[in-house]
Structures are given as C-alpha cells and as structure tokens.
Length: 245
Image 1 (tube, rainbow, N blue to C red):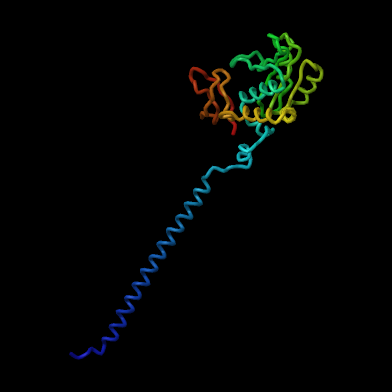
Image 2 (image 1 turned 30 degrees about the vertical axis):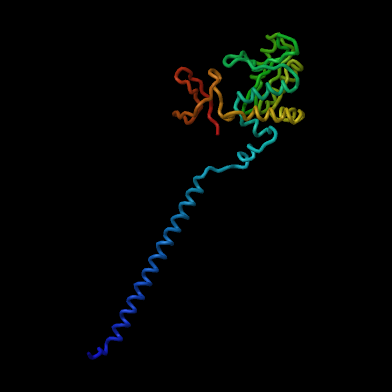
C-alpha cells in the first residue's frame, strides 16, 4: 500500500489538536480551582465581618481580679445592691437587703452586733447619670423618719454639685458614696473580701436588670419607640426599664 504523502501533516494536526485539548482541560481545571478559592475567601470575609466583635473591655472583664469602676457601672441594680450589702458584711456589720417591691427608700439595713433594730440604712442606685439633689433630699427625709442614726446613699455614678452641697449641710446623718469612692473603699479590704465582692458583682446575667416587683430577670422587648426591658411576667406585671447596650 502506497503511503499518503499528506500523512505526516495529518499526524501533526492530530497532535496539535490533542495538545490543544489538553491545554484547554488544564486551563478549565485552573479556572475552577481559582473560582473556588475566591469563593472561600469571600465567605471568610463575610464570616469575619459578621463575627461578634470582642472588645478589650469584654475580654478583660472575664480576667479581672478585682472590681473596677468600669465593671461596677455595667452591673444591674440588684447585683449592685448585693455588692453593697456584702461590702458591709466584710466590714464586720450585720447587713441585709430589704424585700423586693416598695422598699420605702431603704435598700439595706445595717445592724450593730446583737441589735434587733437597724442603726443605719443605705440606698443603692445603679445610675448612669449623676444623682441629683432631689433623690438625696428624699433619702434624707427617710433617714429623719426612721429610728436610725445615719444613712448612706451609694451609687455607681456620682453626685451633682447641689447634691453634694446638701449632704454637707446634713452630715453626719447623711453620707454619700460615689462609684469611684466605693471602688477605693473596696480596694482597702483583704484580697479574699475583694474576690468575694467580684463574685457577687458578676453572678448570673449581671448586666440584665431584674424586675423590681417580681425579682426575675427582665427580657428585651420592642416597642414603637425602640427596644426596652420588660418583665417576663407581662401582662400580670407591666414593669419596664430603659434598654441600654
């Protein structure tokens, strides 16, 4: 059989086609891998963007060895009352919080050893803003109407100039203790006492407020004016509190 003179040319064409197909296949694989890689990078960026941001404060909060003013101002009112009550116990006094509900302006009663009647009372306010003279004056009225020698108004924040001026006129019957001063007083206690106070401050959901009527943790609800804390026993209890982040 006579060889076709064009056969070498046909063989070259076939080889080129095979090489081209192989190249195309390789390029397709490369493009698929690149597309998959870009997709994963995009997903990682989204995940990183949506991941809850841990601030230095939130991380350090879990590593605190002592109470700080920053942490004190984050705890809810019930935990703050318990911290104040425990502080007085660590100072050697008999101390107890009043019942939940209408307390008549008294949050803590302090007793001398062996006495059945309190010798001192305390009011505790976990406020974000400064305590004004109105609140201080009302508490002084409670002191005057009670059979006690003095009273102390404790807050996580501070007092206005007018409130401080009023307290100076009524001292020593009325004493004021700001958040900064309270932290300094706690710092003078033995380390074991400071550890106990830190544990009391951060017990449970310490940032979620308790209902003053029902003594249960409140829940976040949404209203026409935005989010707020409401009692979980609604509608039996309609107590609300301002929502703060």
